[in-house]
Image (tube, rainbow, N blue to C red; front, side, top):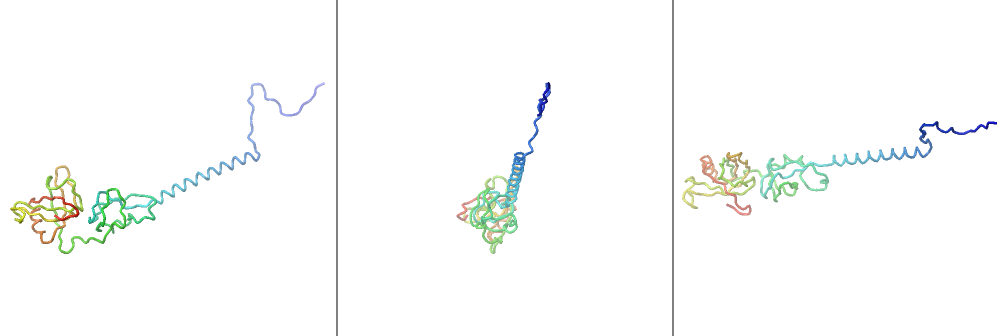
Length: 221
């Protein structure tokens, strides 16, 4: 007499058991957890992008700038930084308004330009001053010379005939702009001088008879 049995049949010989994914509450819990992770990742990415967008363009000194220096466009570059909203620094949108201002304190290369470092517009040349241009061959100026430096303009070969030596005179000046020499070529310099000395210095510069000597920023020439 044969007896019938109920229930799942065992797998055939050599077959691989098939496991079905559950379809109950546990499966839905895992799906919900995955969706939450994806949402969290998207939120982190959005916060990171927002942080990048909040970086502010600020003006940074492209070289060492002494106090009393008149700012030129070549003195500055733009850097994008975050966390500057509460700082009194000069933004990139103020570049045009910054050029021509006088520094009240020295600013080192790479430093962010603070608003408190800017004095009034220079208005160079001021009353009683004049601007003189000169082309200086190597050896007639210090290699470290930069815009903003205080200098002594030494005129030789009888152009001035001053009391400091036969055929030699020295004039106090301020370097407005300075373009360094290329290879062995001359450097181009603009000097702010006393208006009464401008004719002598200009004539000597045309005759290539001047030498520029850098002096202490705290004293005259």
